[in-house]
Image 1 (cartoon, rainbow, N blue to C red):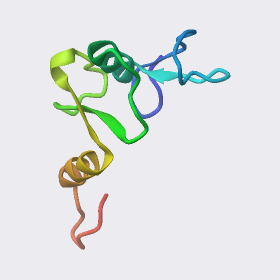
Image 2: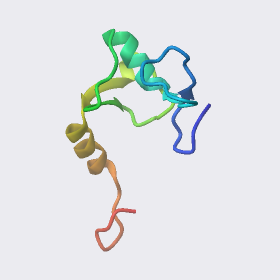
Image 3: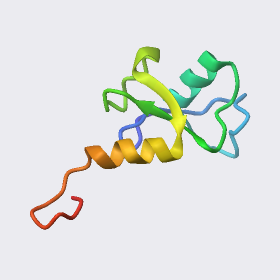
Length: 85
């Protein structure tokens, strides 16, 4: 399923963070398989090329939330008054 924000989500029955009908991001599941452990709450899986459906291992990077926030803020566009659109 692709959610309203453009991310692919799944209902994995065996995921450690899966609650009642909780969908898990596919890019998180891919990274967890790669690093062989669950993602910690302070970690984020970043799409390097910005394409939210491109969950290829080469397009994903594990980072802390602060670094991810600074990367995504630098990509956001501002209007004529300097406000984020």
